[in-house]
Structures are given as C-alpha cells and as structure tokens.
Length: 313
Image (cartoon, rainbow, N blue to C red; front, side, top):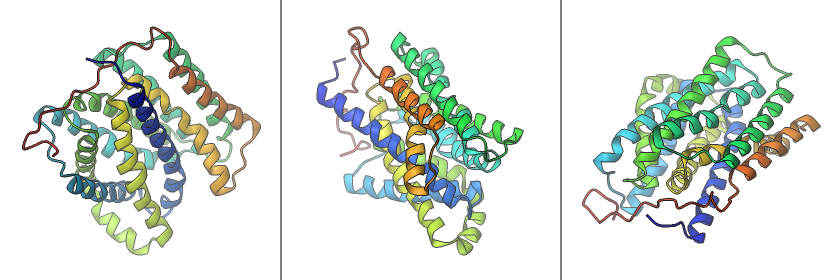
C-alpha cells in the first residue's frame, strides 16, 4: 500500500472530469437519437460502436485478457451497467420528462455510497455525506425546475429507478475487478458483455438504421465512442484510485453540465431556479471531494502486475 502521489491524484481528477463532461453530453445525444431509435436498438448500437473503438485500442496497445479473478466483476457490471442500465434509461426517458428522469436516476450515487460502505468497506467521512446531501438537493432543484413540460408515468419512474439501481450495482461490482485488471480491460469486456446482452434488439437496430436520419445515427455512434468507450475507461481509471462512494458523488456534477450544454447546444435557456440547482450540484461535488487531514488517508494503488501471457504487454 502506498500513498497517492500528487501527479496520480491530478490524473485521476482529470479522468473523472472527462467522464462527467462526456456523460453530460450523452443526454443531448440521447434526446436526438432517441427520436429515431427505440431504447433497445439505441443501446445496442451505442454498445457496438463502443466495442469497436475499445477493441481497436486494445489491439494497438496489445492488451490481453483480464485475469480470471476480474471476470466476475466485469460480467456483473457488464450485465447491469452496460446492458440493463442503458436499455431501461433510454426507455424511461421516453416515458417521463427530463427533470423527473434526472431526479430519479440521481439516487444512484446515494445507493453507491450505501453499497460501497456495506460491501467494499468504503469510509463515509462527514464531508462526503455533506457534499452528497448538497448535491442531491441541487439535483432535486434541477429536476423540479425542468419537470413542467412533460408528463411522468408510473412506468417511467420505475424504469428510471431500475436504472439507478443497476448503475449503483455495476459500479460496486466493477471496483474489485480493477484490482487485477486495467481500466481498459474492465471497460472493453464490460462493454462486450453488455452488447451481447442487447443482441436480441439486433433486428430492431437494422430496420431502424435503414430509416433513421444520418444525424441520429451519428449521435448513436458518438454515444458509443465518447460517452461509452472513452468516458467509461476514464471512469474506471479514476475509480481504481479512489472509493466508489467518492466517484459516485462526482457524478452529481452531471445535471449542472446538462443544463449548460442544453443552453449552448439546444438554445434551452435555463431559469434562475435551474441555475441555482446546478450551482448546488457543483458545490456539493466540491465539498465531497475536498480533503482534510483525516480525509487524506492512504489509498491503495494497485501494484503493477508482473507480465503474463494473458496480461497487457
């Protein structure tokens, strides 16, 4: 066990920032592609695009198969997070307005904290809890401020709730796998597992792709290459260097960024209530990731694995 160096901390923070920005951009792309693709087809197209990009990177880097000890976590996260989560989230966002979806899905970081404390032994320092409370209040504010234009169905709320549970379960399952596999390996094979789970939607994807406008298909490919292949890899890199609870709290910045991106890309001018909620989200993330003398406790960094035939070269 050794302390994180300042350089490693900065790299992990940068990776988390890339993840949050790209995941926020996914909401804009899903809105565009979702008008032409059904939930399952969109999830499969996104995952296949992600797999192609990740496999290409693995071949260039000569990345081998993960160790056997990592496969359980990879498989569980692949089924829950890459597969089930993406389908039910796409479906849920067709049933409820954006504000309700954001509000329900944002219980995910709270579930990650609870599961991480229970299953992984993650610490729950007061600053983390306080930051999560502030961010959740911001997410509620953003959700309420954006909930006036669409209707909310019971089915949609249940689907978003299932997405939040799957997200939390996938993160907690992924964390142990990163102790014996690289971030790229965990992301690549998790994405592949998710794509296999979504293969029943292949017929829909083929038929809908034939009629979809080019812009919708490009948005689907973007979702696969950037918010999936790149962002999930940077997420895994950062997760390997901190706790699941702290990484979950970081994602509370997503609603604030979605508001900003919708403003810039779609011309949706946010109201003062929405801006206040976004500011609360960012403030909570800042509090949760701030450090005190006790919060700066040693964090284990996975030691370099000896080269094996099945490991990356």
